[in-house]
Image 1 (tube, one colour):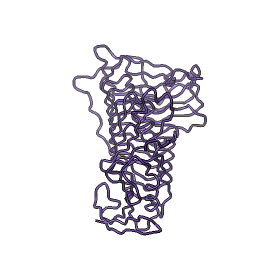
Image 2 (tube, rainbow, N blue to C red; image 1 turned 45 degrees about the horizontal axis):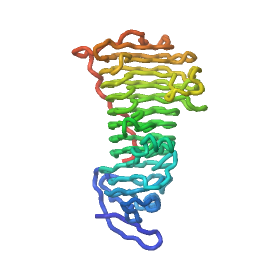
Image 3 (tube, rainbow, N blue to C red; image 1 turned 60 degrees about the vertical axis):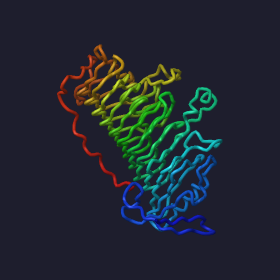
Image 4 (tube, rainbow, N blue to C red; image 1 turned 120 degrees about the vertical axis):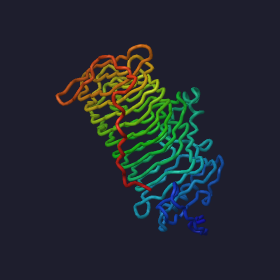
Length: 426
């Protein structure tokens, strides 16, 4: 088996040759791979901080001239404090990162309020693994007594300034904050993820996207105490496809309008998803009293709801803790061209459709088509305010009961089209 393990750039190195064929570890199919295993740089399964060893292995892989470099975290549980794997790397690419073991914060290590593990300034990055898990150890920190003493909500994994890259096949559990945050990035695919945190855990979004373009979140199972997927300000061309969500707060656009100078959101598709036992289904949320911005060209389609409290919701009075300074001021986020289509299943509340738009900037171009929701033994209701018809808006929602599913659906969900393929990492 092969690898070039450079144990110390000054003292000595051990040459072993490893060829990884096809499969999740391949970094260039059928080609020899130069593997930089963190244990060859001093990392060991223990409670001590392995940051120095991780970074030494990263620097060697990042600076490698051998081609097809792979940074490898083998089986075992490795502790580490906050760590950033920075680019750019040699030749403008990045090593593949293969996590086969468990990474968790070290005992006593201080984590910032921003991120635990960060990949930044990189192109053509692949982060993957066989059974790899990032355990944020947040379940204990979510104890009410601990939470009251520490406000730290550390994101488990951040892609910051990353392009043409893939995050694939990893498990994330018990984050202290967001599990995955993709920010200031472009052409990133996150697929095949398993993300889990207790239903009561706060601010534990599964995947958050912000200030990014051409992002795909695909075929993942996410259950947390907050949004399964959230799309924040500055997001353009984002597709969420094939996600199973629950528990949590559903699949959300926002929150928007909390800060001055937020960039617009446009071109979002959430489709072929199942939402189970959540407090919301598909949602757009903006803060009251917000500065002006826009959210437009948003589509929710082919969604199955299973016991969801608010299956379809636009909330422009979003105030999660009921003490917003501008609670009585209208939101100035303009929401337009929003489509809800082929959404079916069960609501755990009577109000299946709740569209509460801004009196200052009413929603325009809102379409509902093929909505089939049941609300137990009572008819479903819809509640609307400040939803305006425009000449090209098509059928606009009216405040009428939502039809229950027919015994034989009139039309089956549309066939799932392929998601645009990116020329991204392996």
